[in-house]
Structure formats: structure tokens, C-alpha cells
Amino acid sequence: MFQLDFYGTLVAASLVLLLGRGLVTRVGFLRAYNIPEPVAGGLVVALILLALRGLEVEVRFDTSLQTPLMLAFFATIGLSADFASLKKGGRVVGIFLLAVTGLLVVQNAMGIGLAKALGLDPLMGLLTGSITLAGGHGTGAAWGTVFSEKFGLASASELAMASATFGLVLGGLIGGPVARLLIKRVQSPGSLEPEKPRVPKGFEQPNKERSITPFSFIETLALIAVSLLAGTLLNGQLHDTAFELPTFVCVLFVGVILRNGLSALGLYQVFEREVSVLGNVSLSLFLAIALMSLKLWDLASLALPIFIILAAQTLVMALFAIFVTFRLMGSHYDAAVLAAGHCGFGLGATPTAIANMQAVTQRYGPSQIAFLVVPMVGAFFIDIINVIVIKLYLALPFFAAA
Image (cartoon, rainbow, N blue to C red):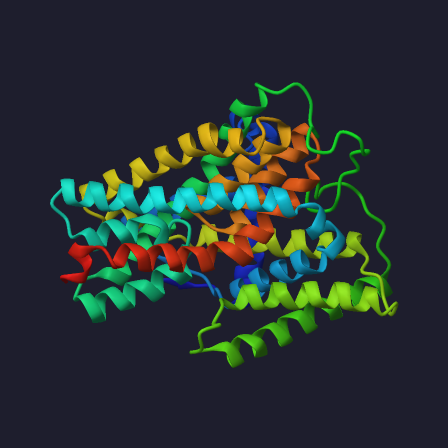
């Protein structure tokens, strides 16, 4: 077994990103279907590691940097959001929230229905529904423990982690093809705000050159650090209370307060170019480490019925994005980008959704409203609504009897 330390893991993650860039540049299929670069490179490395494991060679990475990178990314999302933009996107956020809530209900109904049809415990269907797909690894780990301790479901945590891993991979793979299919149906980008010039912002086109000065870079780095510290402290204060939220939500919230508070007091205006650069670096490295660290053999250990459920969930996500999300959001270019983002966090996580949308907007053009709506819904609202939906399902008679 080879154990890479912090520096070795950072080198490996950087090489994964370079590999992904090379693959997307040279492989027409990946480019045509808007596969994000970290996903392309990360999956190739994960497959190589799976092959090496078959030869009894295992490589492990130091993942201590993964959580700080994820939190830094959400801090930059918060620092990029001003109240004027939030107000502008209010109606669109509400409509998108309806689509997201509908998917949560459908995912759990599909999981439970297929589990019962295949002779499995309905709790397994719930674990392969919105808990792990929309909720991700963190939500899956939390509910896996509950199902093991309260309901006596064996291997619940292992099933949750494997299902969340499956979702993370597929969420990054289907978003681009879904968007490509939908974009063929529209004439031009930007139909939500046709009266305003479409100037791409940082998270929409991350490769666009931006001027950076050392001092402004340090200022932005300080804002991110304050968001991380204050958000972590806030999460600690809310722990085991009715208002408990995931750490990344607290960090994002602090970022929003910092940006708008400093602006309202006339003390400081956030430089979006530095925020976007640091945010995109954090996002890319986070996804590279997450994907190259995937233990694909955990998925291989799943029983065939669980694979059937997860494959069905993937198909449902794609169909839902095409026939519900896209149409509900207006059947235009912005709706197509939103559909790609929905695939990302409907099966995986918000960073995957952002990567999906970046791959689309890098090729087809900016979608400012999508980069406003998806982080808000994916970070603020989905976890809260998911908990409500899960608890409503657990109140069903066959769960209550357990």
C-alpha cells in the first residue's frame, strides 16, 4: 500500500486537473458532451486505482485538504451574492425550488417502490433516494447511522456511502449531455434577461483572464478565511439545536453577510474577479481530490438490486431535468444550464452542479441567473427541504411499524 501525504496528494490533484484538461481538449466525445475537466481526470485515475487494487496494490490519499477546499468554495459563493441579485432572482429561485422539491419526492418514491418490488427493506430504498443522491455523503452518513441504530438496518452506512459515491460520479457525467440535448432546442442564450448585456461573471467562464493584484488577492483571501472561521463557529453554536445546519451552509451565510454588510456600511467592495479565481481553484481541487479518492470497489460490492435502483434513479434524474426542470424554468438557454446544474446536485453535490454548468457556459455562453440560483438552492434550501421530505416518508405506516 502507498500512502501519499499532504504534499503528494496536492501534486496528484494538480496532475489530475491537467490530465482532465488534456482529455477534454483532445477527446471530442468529452468536449461535445460538456464533461467537466475534474470529472474526466478524476475518473480516469479512479479506474487506474481500481485496476491496481486488482493487482493487490492500493494507493491512499491524504484527504485533509478536501473539506477546507469545499468550505472555501462555498465561502466564495456567499461573497459573490449581493442582496440586489438575490431579490432579482427571487421568482426564479422559487420556481426552481419547486422543481427540486418535486425531484426529492420522486427519488424517494422510486427508491422505496423498487426496493419493495425487489424484496429489499424499504429503508434501503430511502437510502438510495434523496438521502444520498440529493443529500450527498454527509447526509448519507448521518441517516445511515440513524437507520442502523434506530431501525436495525445492517450495513446502512456502507450502503449510504456507496450510493452517494455512485451519485457523485453520475451527477458529473449526465449534466453535460442533458444540457447539450436541451440547448439544441433553443435559439440563443440569455432569454431570461434579454434586455441587459450578457457579461460573463467569474463562475460562468472560469478560464477568462482577470487582472489580479497581490494586495487585492490577500484581501479576498482574508474574507474567505473569516467566512471559514465564523461559519465553523456558527455551526458549533447551532449543533444539536432545532436550527442546526451543515457547516458549508453556515460558511456561505457568513460570506453573504460579509459581502453585503461591508458594502452597506461603505467600508469595502468585494472584488469579484479575485473571488471567482479563488473559488474556481478551490472547486477544481476539491473535485479532483474527491473523484481520484473514490473507492470504486465499494460500488462493485453492492448487490445487483441496489445497482438496479441507482441506475433507475439516474435515468429518472435525466428525464426529470429534461421534461420537468427545463420546461418549468422556461424552456430556454438559462433553463438548459439550470437543468445541467440540477443533474449535478440532484445526484451528487453542489460543487458538481457548478462544474456541470461551467462546462456548459464555457462552450455556449454565460448564464448569470443559473449561477445565482443553483448555489442558493443547492446550499441553503435543499438540505432543509430534504430533511422535511425524509421525515414525511418515515411517517408512512410501514416505516412507523418498524
